[in-house]
Image (cartoon, rainbow, N blue to C red; front, side, top):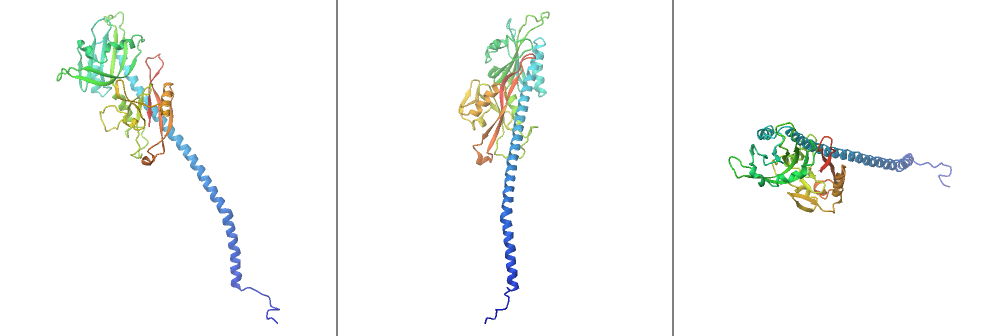
Length: 364
């Protein structure tokens, strides 16, 4: 007979505890497997959606900032050209006088106003032309007999100006000019520069003493004045500077281009002083044709750069916009893509004349 016939079999307390613990642990395991992974997946999904939304809104903010900066800079150039136009109109209100014209050029330079290269009155009746040029702190009157030594000949601008209305101003593109500058220290000196001409008819009052002095006025402006505006607003001194912690490997610059697609010049560093016009930063991004008439640094990207030519076409139509371009130097800069914000630069010839697109401005 077995000793266990009438005895109830029970596990020791130790084994009962371990058995209960195992059942409890199994329930926890089921909870871990059934609840935590879905929660993790939900958190990952929410985080990813938050990331996408953040990227979207940050992208919109950067696009608007780039567009705003491009528009403000174009507005500054337009205001500068409008000021030049207004000063030429003021000059045209009085009889051409060499002393007043000399004083105008000298005062602008002394007061750090617009440093014009020269102001010229061309007579349509006779050879009573008045030609005054400025260089650094000196203003000289070019003898009338040397007008043929000015390149291009100032008489050729008459066809551009003759049909203008009263107080309407014509503006040229960039012109390579050469003119004699007979200073006291060097009577045979010649000046070579890249300028923009603004011109308008001089129409005397029929009842005045100078009623026979009909002609036209030309104001000559060194194009580096406009380049310096680009440089200032692309520098840390700009009131629009918003990237104080930007990587030094990331170049920030802007440039001006005409309606034919020629890139005219780029901004320069604020510490480079009075440098020549350049387009080397732009040429590091594009390939194309180098050198345009009157402007050796002028550069025209090849037709394969569709984004650039879309920008030119939009500017011709008076539109502004923004292009997003992948950065080929991503490994160096750490920037996957950058924005090109562009906008037209307009010039208003007269009070009752609609503005016309003079050039385009692009901010990188």
